[in-house]
Image 1 (tube, rainbow, N blue to C red):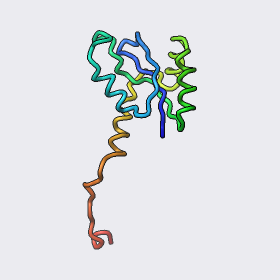
Image 2 (image 1 turned 45 degrees about the vertical axis):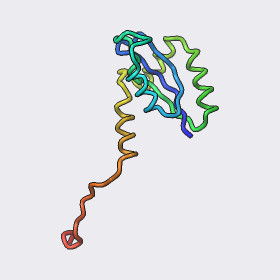
Image 3 (image 1 turned 90 degrees about the vertical axis):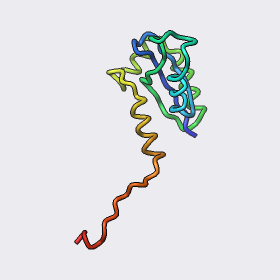
Image 4 (image 1 turned 30 degrees about the vertical axis):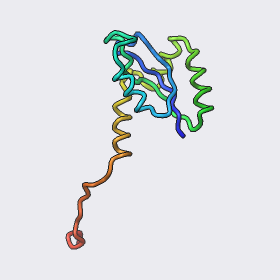
Length: 116
C-alpha cells in the first residue's frame, strides 16, 4: 500500500507541517475542512507544497522522522528543490484522482464505413 510524506503550509508560508498518510486526498480534505479550532483563518494549513510517495510504511516512516527533524530552512530548501514557486499541488492530485476513478461513459462510436 502506498504511503505519503508531505509538507503543508498556510497561504503566507508562516507555518509548515510535516505529515504522513496513506490517503493523501482524504488527509488534505480534512485540513481544508478543519474548523478554526487550532489556527485563525490566515494560518489554516491548506497548501500542499511537497510530497513523496513510498511503497512501504517502513520507508515512509523513516523519511517522515528525518524530514520532521529538519529545520525550517532545510524544509524550505526541500520544497524549493521541486516546487520553486510554492504552488499548491493539491490541484494536480485532484485531477489525477478524478481521472483514475472516473467511469468512462462518453465514448464516441464511429461506424466502420466512415473510416474508409
